[in-house]
Image (cartoon, rainbow, N blue to C red; front, side):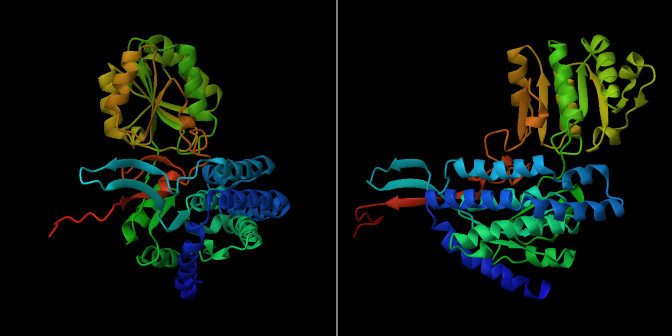
Length: 418
């Protein structure tokens, strides 16, 4: 496809005017038709995914990546439900976020409009094909999807369903364009199309995201990794904290909102740490701790600085006992990744102090890190997570795929009357 990539991208850009002009009713109808098409094509999509899984397993793909790649009827139902939920969300296009009348009588509004063409670069997540398309369309955008070779059959099968829905609605299929050439040269070419692509969103491992950021000439939303922390305060409900720990680390360890580091206040450590290690080990978790936690659990492996900085994406967690909440915050600032931080505490003032002091896209108080997800936070689904404080910060939904512009209404006012 590399020789015709520019033509495919131009077709996608040309479709923007049509998609951006759709009203809310038309967009909702389109998304429901897409969900219907995906549900009807379940057997085709799952068969394509089975082929991808077999090839990935033969290539020695990691357990975490296999988990992200795998589809089954339940997960496909979740994808269909996510598309339907996006269809029910408030339409961000045309939203007036501010209105003011100036002393000279002109009315100034700030109004949300579509970004244009969004390039999605992603690995081993076939759900992103549907999620990204749905969110982009709801925000009046078109999208160019460049998935990895490991999920190519799955991505193409899902995209075929989405394109059929576009066709049946009389809309340009190019509004959802899939790049079926997995070579990095093609990705670089896509990232150089400054006259076509308005924003690139990479979604995958740190290596992919750094590659995109280094080679792109278009704006990039970045999220390098998710080193998520749970801090258990001295006043924490221990049973609650244990539930947050087990859910955050073991429910799905291969995702970016899984816990990677546990910090425990020294006052609660003698009673909490042994219970936490025991519960984690019951779930097969490799726990690595500092000297204090090793004193509390004799056979605990030593945690290194590299462990505290690691996004394990596996059944491994780093543990440290801290002297105070400020000690915990210092540790997080040194090793964290601006993704998600959790505090377990009974003290409201402590919780508010933690919220103010932590630089992180999502902060949780007495809730699992696994809720750091667009669907769980009311976005329907998410197109990605921004930890770079551009126009969006945190999980990104449809509204994050729009920008604000000024609309000025006057009655003939001029700045310098003659």
